[in-house]
Image (cartoon, rainbow, N blue to C red):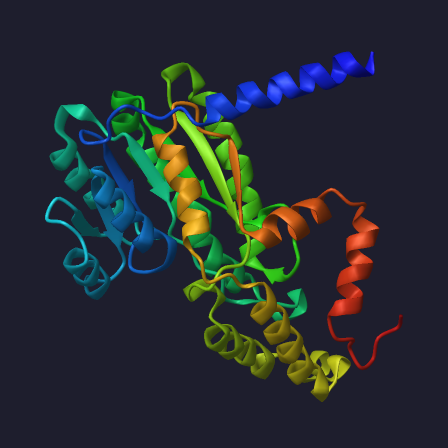
Length: 319
């Protein structure tokens, strides 16, 4: 019996391996629109796809980001300004893309734009802090996806949504983890609803990488604002040493796990666009594969204890 199970397992692995490496024959006539191309994953992905022959349409938040990307790319790469929190900006971007792709439609949509701050202990937040993050990471992704669906259906295209390992395991407070959890659910719904139209939807779940989202200076500045505005009574419950200790722990963890090699993420995005059979989910980074994803399957109380040990303790804790 065990020999049969082993044989079937090995056969399944071989078939999956062969199937996973089958790619499309040509990319030269395929248009891909990417959000968040000013820096980080989006910027690198736009350059790499451009070199491979894709017709890259890069969405940037700032003119400076668009100009820098254009100078580093071939003339075939085109840029457009888009603010994913603005319905009018999204509408204009869709009209511009329509003019670029014509009857071919849009082969790929990569929802990459995202923000993280403010993150930190939940009690330090107010509801506007959650709205600020989710406006980009959640509702921006949803509105952009819905707006581009007619063009994607025309090309029987693909959607690649950037989630996070923190969409599997909520390790800090604020809107970031919540926004990534919603992207997981939205992507699953979108994939199932569009199956019959030939549209494929993939989710990329990066671990921690050195990008603007994980920049320690901006994270610490954001945390300082949260700490300074907190109600005196609440701040007293944490103690004056808590803030500095929290920063030390966060800096220590980020310096250990943040990977400078962004190509580990863009490789996943490229596979989702190039493969004949893209995967439903991609885990990018050693910490995603060996820390966060395994931890997400553990009983919740084990993760709770681990985080309680790692993070600093409030001065007036009861346990």
